[in-house]
Length: 391
Image 1: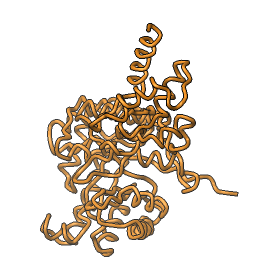
Image 2: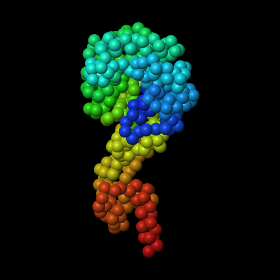
Image 3: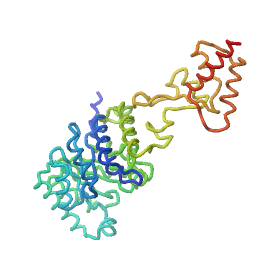
Image 4: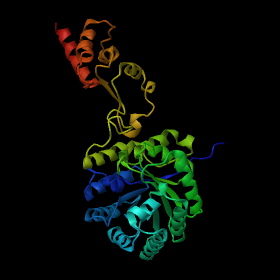
């Protein structure tokens, strides 16, 4: 008998890592709307921002802290007392996780911070103790650039954080430099250092196009939580996309052995809130959210899909709040025109003069890549049929 799939939690960083990318700035009110949409679809934790970075982030955290009821929220803090105090001032301590950033690689120790390993470990110890003294009961360690750090540094950071009340260790592939096998091995080591006391979360970037495969490998290795963003927005090439992860778990979760609580039918609405704030960000060919994700204009594909969408469709648009589009362009065939005639109660055979005329004029001779919808083609056919009857 196959064991029950393991439940994993989803942490969304759209409002923090996603907003950090150029062109993605959001107002506190826009962040609030997105946070509520994320909560509605089952996100466990919403990362609301970096409160010490700007008054705007501070205000967003204040608003979000008052609005969320089912999801918790997170503030990102550097490893110093002042940042944690500002987070407490912004959102209080109830239902509030503080994620304290650690210097996770020797590269960052030397070139970013200019501190020693011992100093990095000490500031983690001091900051976690201060967070506890302020009343925070949910704390996490965000290990920046963990995938380029030595085991000696990473283990010292993890064990120090756990010894001082840390509930979640966040393994960040900050530069997106790992392949799945490497990342899974690292997650296994972090799980061992957590000693069953802290959960393990993963935060993957897409610089090599491997953020989703790395995230899935981490889950297979025992990670408890994933950090994602809507449409994968984030620094440089972005992060693991929430909708892609949700799609994989919706269709393959039982096989992989883990599931989550994301309500996929609400994803498009959450994405619409993001688009309202920063404009469209999904490429045309992007899975789930892309304009072409559920659209086709190729005649061979259309012939099959008009009979039954399952012929060329594995991911179902309705499951993700989207709709299927049959577009008519110069790669479409006669079948789509014939289909429109039949929908209008006018069965025709291939070679019918009116069908051929409409095909040549509105399909074959389209000189650009521009398409029309099947509804627009139907209007053309209706007009021509009406003219034919009138004659």
